[in-house]
Image (tube, rainbow, N blue to C red; front, side, top):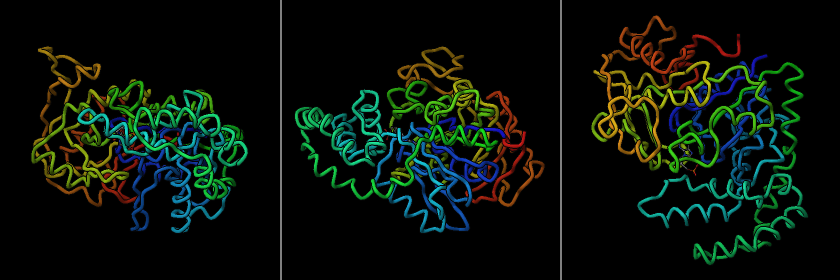
Length: 431
Ligand code: IMP
């Protein structure tokens, strides 16, 4: 049975949550492999809206197993809140439906303190992080001073690890950031109850996935954030602290690359970004405002207004290459109804060079002016459509042009937030 990675092709918020929720019916296991509670997947199920930050959105389907992989950074308090919320909605009835990797690193309160203090210190040059402690936790992981889930659920191991790491952490908090030091006993006490609540879910996720594959189960790997926020391939340093591209589905969940059959990129029909950093097609005018209000472009995690702009084919092509996409899913096409004409960025003009067709280093991208192609828009609402041939001609043309510029086929279209507002052209799970 095919295993499919879903990845964001822009700066996150492409509408992955809804797509994963929809594709889950074709998969058996759904895996998060990177990021943490900086992600926010908004779901509307049976008219009820809720946001998931850590648990894969597939949890809203009974009988599926959701895995939080070793590459994810987990805030235990957030995870417990989310488990309670999901159970409150009538999902996750069976504890075996959630597996949390024992290797995943734990976000502790001091990670959030450091995240916030650093952002304050950066003043006008801040990254605009979500404040969830993501960067400081990944730093500790790589520096080999992190706390993992296997430590969290074992009180002796937790205490021993904290004894090792806190002296340096406190020096940093006090001397460099001017913050209060943290107390070992207070941390142990703070996480004691959440750790016990999470313990039944903690397991060897890599082993579970290998066994699932052996049994012929289909796995859906759910990427968070987007390719341009990837710590290696994004608009560094205005990025998140993990690899968001499809390759990390393997590392972050403990499977080999040979297990992946398809990589599907989720792409909004226009572009948005939250936080700081270059965004060549950003529109700070009434069109940008129209996209924001029609598209309800406000962050699911922080509530911040998203910056909005025209579709950027250079960005999407970058995602095509860095992920090895086998197909695209275009979301929020309905938001463009009534905007005429539409513009598509086909390249950049940088320092007099009109032919830049790849994403350059950030300092150059900051100076990039978009080179636009103008195409006709459409006025019809797309509400209620469920076949490609029902779309207005201009919408078909717009989609054909996006596929051509990005260099891969469109396999699905999302025309609104509800589960049923979706046109399926090819289901990657049915090969
Ligand atoms: P961090 O991941 O909280 O460290 O934030 C780093 C950058 O990534 C900031 O610009 C955030 O706004 C952005 N970011 C992190 N997670 C998401 C997401 O899920 N969607 C969109 N942007 C995100």
